[in-house]
Every structure is written in C-alpha cells, then in structure tokens.
Length: 237
Image (cartoon, rainbow, N blue to C red; front, top):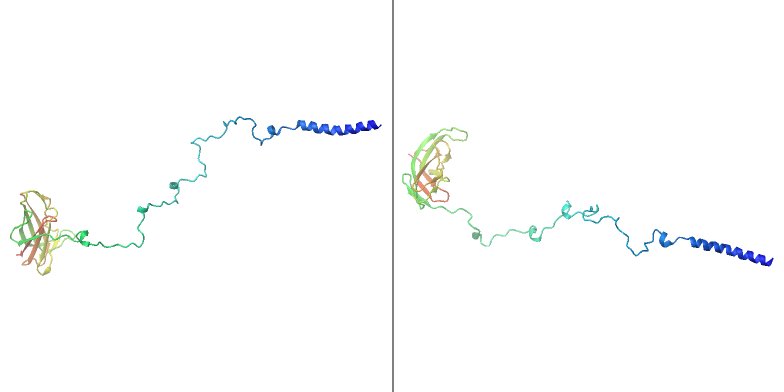
C-alpha cells in the first residue's frame, strides 16, 4: 500500500511538469514572430517600394515661400540708397557766383535813327524799311481795333553764313513810358526762317498805340535770339 501511494504521488508531480515542458516547446520564437523586431538577416531590406526622392517630387505644403513671393515682406535698401536723414538742411554754396549766372547777360545794342540802317557786329544790317500809322479793324476774336503803328523791318545778311531770323523779336515804346501793344491784325507778317549769306528778308509788325501820330517812339529789333540789338529812335508822322 505504501509503494502504491508513493507512485501515485510521483505521478501527480510529473504530470504538471510534463505539461509545462510541452507548452514551453510550443512557444513561438520572438525573434521571428514579433512584428516590432527588426530583421535578423545581415542583408539590407530592399527599398524598391520606398517613395521616390527625385527632384520632381512636390514640395511640402508647409514649406516657407521665398521672400519675393511674400507680399508683406520688406526689403531693406542698401545704405547708399537710403533717404537723407530727416532734419538735413540745405546749405548755400560758399561762392554763389560760382554756381552760374542768375540772369541772362545784357545783349549789346547799336543805336540809330528811324531812317538809318544799323550795322551790327555780326555783319547783319538792320533797317526800318517803313514806319507808318494806321487804324486797324478787329477781324477775329481777341484782336484789337484802333490806332496803331506799322513797322516794316529789313534784314541784310552781309556775313558769310546763313542767319536765323525765325526767333526775331521787335518791340515799340513811346514817350511817357507807354508801350505799343503787339497785335496780329493785318498787315502783320513777321520774319521767318533763315537769311542766306548776301540775301535780305523783311517782316512787318503792328503795335496798338493811341494816339499813334506825332509820337516819339523807340523800336528795338533783335533779329535772332542772343544776338546784338538794333535800336531805332525818332518820331512818327
């Protein structure tokens, strides 16, 4: 009876041990079945299925655009392009005369009477071919009507080159400081174009002056801008 009981006890102890050993032999290898474990092979996994890294891949939407594309970005100009500092005051030159003339120089004048030619230093001879009084009628809006002095200017070019008379200016002043008012009423016909060497040209100018008869007048003729003036003085008939 004792031997039988001893064998029963041993058998009862062996059975659980055998079960443990059996279950232990059936457990999976964690190195092969664990999805989180890395490959045990020495070979590097093929990356054929990895995304392409070529240059034509789209940029990440979170990429920061270049400064030129940002409408709110500001560009700091170079130092030499920055505006002058506020508070800078203009300083006059040390020598104002060195900055150039402030007014046109006076042109030389050659004086004579109404009935004599005046030879200028430029070899141009200016004379008054006729000076008379008349009464003009207003023909178009803006024209004057009334007494006037008509002056016909004659220009002889004694120089060796053509002379431009398109910018000629003729004016008339009278006694008492009165000024003849230029008008375009007939027979107004000014000097134009150029006068060739050895040639002549004429222009007629009309000045409103009331009264016009028996007045002491001075006629100034500048046949070309910047050239000497011929100044005629006398009395109208």
